[in-house]
Image (tube, rainbow, N blue to C red):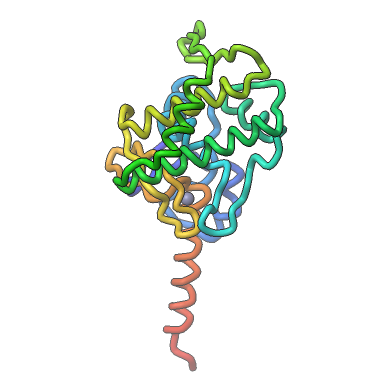
Length: 229
Ligand SMILES: [Zn+2]
């Protein structure tokens, strides 16, 4: 992992190939990170806290929103890959999850804008946090693992996410809330770059798109500027 202009970039993966031809020679490396060991997991968690990874399940909020947890099953999948595995989820639990997600988004956005926290968002985040009964346990390898009180308790998983949101919104963790520079996104993300100048919620999506748009705009400008013979 390295830092370019305050933007964290990751080793190239096969996902990068589509952008490769367009951005030949670019110092920025594309692709999603492949998490291998516990140090990388820690680094990843610091960069993309659980709470903002959760708010990122609705993307392009200011454009054409894409819902990544449209069904209870998809929430189960997301929780599983996020270390909060549950075995089932009801429609009502999905509703609670989405309500929490939007409350976190509202609180994080207000924090990034140095505005007052919306009362309803604070109430929802606190309700979910209080309702959660997950326990942190230490694995023999020295990692933190969340143990839910029951595999059907989506509320426990939401409690962990709510507590994570509280830790970043309260300024308890090292980093700064910021808003994605993409006008169709404007997601609130947690900037842990040394210079605190990260511009995009995710290099692989918004950062990549912005670079592409700039490249195409330049190409058009050059085409217009080129003398016609
Ligand atoms: Zn973004």
